[in-house]
Length: 293
Image 1 (cartoon, rainbow, N blue to C red):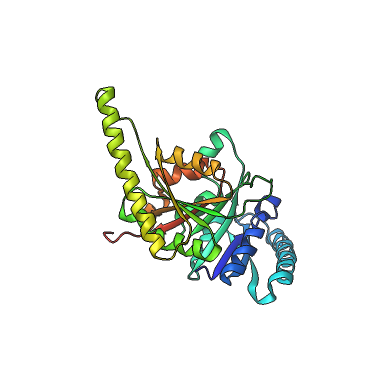
Image 2: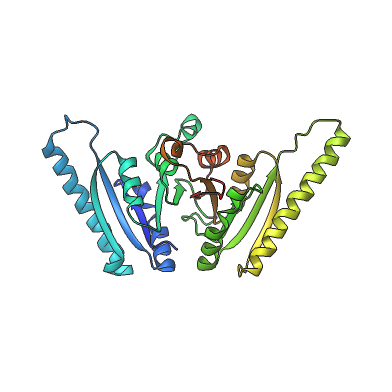
């Protein structure tokens, strides 16, 4: 499924937190791990000797991590490179240079207004990369306090063809990693009319949503997914998805975004954007293309 896992590192302990996940994915899929460090060249005024020095330090840094991983996985499964340029752009170029690549990145543990700004390198990568991107928040932990282990995959669906296009990815992941698949469907209960009428409409919508995810779960069981559950949530989609993920230990939420090109690649859907901004659990973003695009 993923033949290559691209791991951007910036010499921080935070960026290195994803390495156990990279090892786990490499073992499960037989993937190659490529480590990359980008030396920012934001100005032509930076002396070349300084760039060379920083590049040499980055080379030694990545080589040390590569050697440690190679001792566990084998030398043929690990590689590294030091690049120059704008970090987000270079990471995207590196990711899209080979098919079946997954970008695995940590995100900074910002709070408050900083969490509402997708201006970080990770934010720019997830907005523009055409390859899947797995983001691991700084505070993602399992109940025992260690970095989260993937035991459950949450797949929100909204009834659209685009959202359902993520199902082949998530079912393959669940089969390979032995994860439980949880299908989510949410709806907003704020309907017009009297309180009695609101309850009637809410029940109709709830029953329709439940029938939809129940049918999808039954279909996926027939296709060989052993552990499938479903849940209907009442409330705003992004908020409900984030809250459910927090309540579901050792989970990763998989979201689909439009397979656009050009400048529109930098626009995420509102639900996906909201989940990424606020999630305290890992989020896998896959750029999908519906048949009508």
